[in-house]
Image (tube, rainbow, N blue to C red; front, side, top):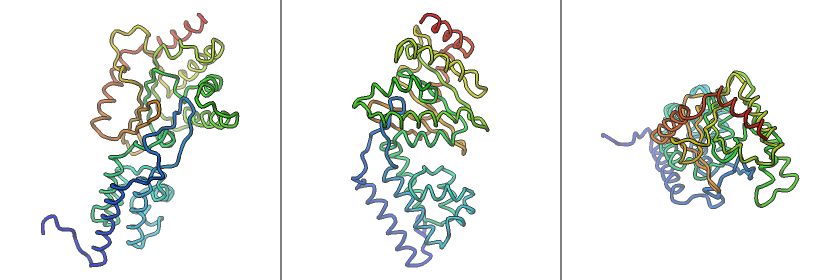
Length: 315
């Protein structure tokens, strides 16, 4: 019958019905232990939390169908052509599954479309409770990262003195232990700038971000020296958007774009107390268009380096 659910056995069909019921209940009754629409501010140093209930529910769905198929994680990993660690992270709700993983798991586990349903649920809410911790994890796996910022220097480009100045302004004021933990985490993240094979980075910063002199003139001199040093890396492009810019494609606010190892693109935007990971192709396309226009409007890398040195000389 067209559109009918295949019934390999009564038990299998009952499992299908039960799994659909579980997904439906999850959609109506979000995990109350989760605090949604909050974000860890990578630039300001706020705290981070564990992945949300949707990720855990998706992982539990994959695990249930893997058990039904009497497969180990190793066997499933071989069938979907991902590592055992990847499968384990997905099942634990600690990793967003790629589109390829979802489709291959659906096929390998003969899941009656349930894994696809769970993935669609995940994508609809992708970002409501996705804290910056998740974006930092994605950074570690990325092949390319584009960042436009008009508020403060992105964490990946912050020298320690600048990071301390930013973190010290966070309210409520962090304890000395919290400051050190945040500084350590931020500096560790920056190692992806130097690892090989190279991740390709593009940064566009508004001139005012540096002119603000966060932390004072000496910190700003150290910041400029660090930016110039980072801009010399073979995998980093740094451009400055002049303070006077009659045409500016970034007036909607800062944003980031990231290409995964599976050549999927994701976006990230962040506000005062919220962060959102974007996966919708139309939204990603719009962000790509804006970023392309920003790259044209900003100074080229060579002219940007010259401007930075002039700014340093005026301090």
